[in-house]
Image: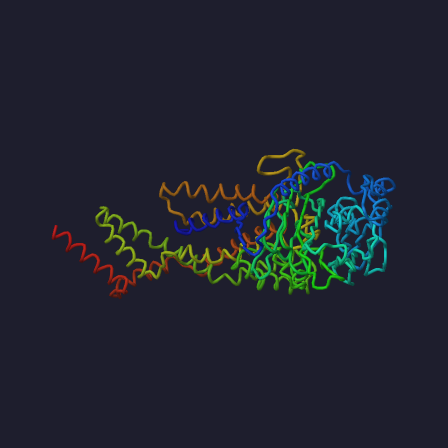
Length: 624
């Protein structure tokens, strides 16, 4: 293997490492919304958010809360700090005890609290947590949705118990009446087979209650998302908040595994809080006028096993064209991050799935995902599917691989000739002649200077597409293969009981096999490296350091991904052996080079321009 190929391999490895730890975020400014939010209110909201986060972190687990439902549920359903309201109906509603009502289909169980007419808990039926318990995206008594509006006096919907006007499996309607007529209505709809909850907030007959100057309402959503997967670090790394501006091609995302806040002072279509494989997405019927979004992550040792604390405060503009019926539509998605499912809602939700940039994303969307779906229709075992996909991808890029190996073999074959050229032109002033002679040698041998490196770089988008697709594929979640219980997380064969910095607290067998196969492949190809002492460091880096470095990086990655790398390395070793055995013959290449010297060289345009430059250089030297 020539120096260019080794540099290419090293660059690919370093780029892979860099991309796994580095995420870019594009800043975005918009001038659509001119009114600035009050800075003091933003600070107050952040302080309150942190206080809420601390209080939520001290709660017991969902199971413990369920066992104590007799007391804690009643505290949630009734108001403890009574306020005095001018409106007698509001005063009465504030002192009532709420009740829980259920909205349910084959996908979701949504429990609503009549106090505040808000979600109390959300269970995704088709899935379970890693430890086989119910999968809550909204835990009981751990979330709140408040609407703040001025209706003669400042009111917060969470302070009042709404009257239950209608209830069945697909629709729940709750109303908050006012003394002088009119009411606030919350209508929740859940269609069969859907993960989308439709929420319509209506102000009915309130023309005399809502002052004309009231043009918007504020909605605040807070939620504590529990841990759902085995590996905390992996789950945290792939969790984030995101939002989408209508008409834009991409989404804006932040808080990728770290505490962060975002002030959005422009109209935004939807806002999402994403756990590794599930999301809660809030989409405005029109657009949110502005938003403040906060995310804070729980510690790995959190006793309640919570993952992240989320808060969203959005401003909804009111359409007052019909004063007797003012409606604020909202859609809430609680479900899995399945690419085709998210895409079916036609709101760009599928962009939440991290498939890479435009080129890598294109490969993932139009090659990797369709191929995966096609194989899944016939093969139930995902380990076998990954194996077949790896073989097919290797076959597709095999022409590039063969070109790379042929170029490397030719470079090795002509090395004695290159050494002769270096001996012939040892002086610095002969650098142009040495370059011309070297290029002439490359041309006679049919070698491109980038022939060994460029084909490997062209393969990189496919490798990166698989790197992004496998950890984000919910299909692999809780799917076993060989000794791996779950292909979406690491496959531990030995738990240490203590943590080794940068490595972890366990041994992942697929990661270990991947590193071993990488070592043997490097040993196999190291024989092509130059014996020049200056290349010793490069050889040590390739044979020893890269496998060790990849072992540390991959130990906490998903078993499906490290299994793919292991299979890919094995196939590459077989491919290398076949090429060296039957495709590339060094003695044949050397004979080809000797034969080429018997033919007069045909000068290219570049060589002619180079000769002209040399003549001009000599002429200038004579004048001096």
